[in-house]
Length: 499
Ligand code: ADP
Ligand code: MG
Image (cartoon, rainbow, N blue to C red):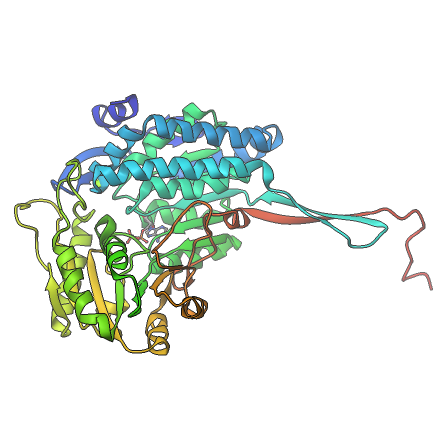
């Protein structure tokens, strides 16, 4: 175990990370974090209130005026991000262990997530000194150019489902572009953010460039949104929270980027390579115990293959090993909180009530009496207008829906308030591109599913979000464009008021 794990586990309650220092919380309060596989409190961390958030924003503003923008070069920012990526790789095991305890995801998944977080930072490290403005041929006797400047202080508000990887989605582009950050992790999973704070310190970022303030949404989160010293909010979470943030952020017209939920269609045409498609569809529907915004939670199967798809998906769902997060054999762990388990169970009950046919799961897995566990669950014959098909469950619950024609499935796929991801399987290239063009989603994959990657822009249509993360497109969300025009002509300007 590296020192970060020891610090977090052995010393009660790590402090807040503000202005490059570890500070006791103003209120003296602690957040008790629960291990969802045992339902027991396993760690305490400091809880930030409005006063702490105000201090963190102050530190971030001071850093923005200081060496970070005045002395540190773009290449040096990149080097610091590279260093941070290297430290994440060094401590991947310890970080993954913390995350598995805090969030309940199996170690094999959290380990992959930490490594991918490092890859994300590496991509943006390389981008830091390639954020160029343009020279514009405005007129021959003028020089016109744009500068891409940091937006300023970024408030990053994160959810509990994939903490470490999402921190890298925000920190990578924000820091590459020269912003400073106040990061508020979710109250359910506050531990790994502070461990990351230790690595940020070690990576050599100037004090105040990144500040970390665990706290509750309506207190610390709302304080960040309301603070006039924050220029932008980058949020991942529920669309209802995003709506509230948008209202709050109107105080100083904060820039907002949101990544919210989804109810993504995964479409199997009759000519799909079913062996491949069903492997991918199973992972797409049940990965992370269903706690992913990009889940392929509505599986559309064309009528002639529908019965086979239902039978095989049910069988595949039953084979998924639900178990303890630290067990190397575990495929999926518990839900991350009692609240999420209750929500998932409520949707399973609703599916039964509303007449869907339960073909796999639906209960608590055998042999797991404690912990927020639920079986991978498959419903067939689901009505696309029913709540089970319209609302995001955020649990391992798949709705299978039959369709007849291409036209019909496009209409069904789009008939939800969300539009984050879509997948479709067919051998017909004309149909593949026709359907891809007509689906309302920020990411459409053909004969694969959800290729989320640092190089690929990612974000939602409709209620799934605002703006894009990942890829070079993410940098647009973290920069302001300033246009500068210089007169080059030697003659006197025309005087419109000369007469
Ligand atoms: P989830 O249901 O997935 O936890 P939420 O949208 O509730 O999604 O939470 C995501 C993040 O938003 C968390 O960090 C949470 O503390 C924060 N949050 C919740 N309510 C607010 C709010 N009113 N203002 C700012 N942040 C909030
Ligand atoms: Mg927890």
